[in-house]
Image (tube, protein in one colour):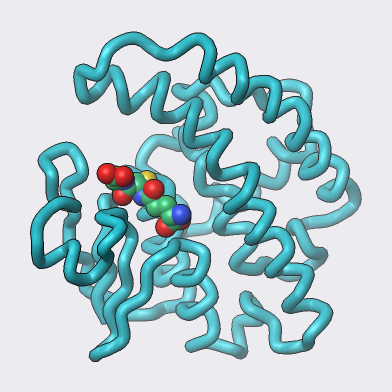
Length: 207
Ligand SMILES: N[C@@H](CCC(=O)N[C@@H](CS)C(=O)NCC(=O)O)C(=O)O
């Protein structure tokens, strides 16, 4: 199995972290986003969106990071990370859709505007985009924070792929200025995720 990733990206780091957590051996293929690696014809043949991460398992190619998390976890059903019970699976799935629709894009705005732009010489952060991300954050973070009250992980006592997805942008919470201060449950839950050996290995900037 190959994982085509740019490891510093949270969307790349989460698939690396899950593979490592599950003990799945995968060859890591670097997609250097800072040097146009995603525009290489061979990469675009795998993902015409020209976006990483991409998983290759024999002749099966899969893009979309949350789908990759599901696929990896389905290879290790005993882990319980992608449950097979319909209601439990739907609950995990709900958080993955919520992540893709709301949480990931708003967190990505903080990371892109405050970190990536500076690293790649793309100019100053866009104040209007950051203001919109702040507004969205104040709408959605209470949902995550409230659900986490009394729960170890987002769907209960069992760690699942939803935790890996939702947690991944928070590896940059501090440098990206993601405003977690008012959300102690999110901070407590992320701290537990960050303690996992696989997370420590994959998360580049969480210290
Ligand atoms: N929804 C996709 C988003 C993937 C994505 O946006 N990847 C970014 C890096 S984090 C990328 O490859 N960007 C390159 C580009 O858009 O040119 C997923 O979760 O896999």
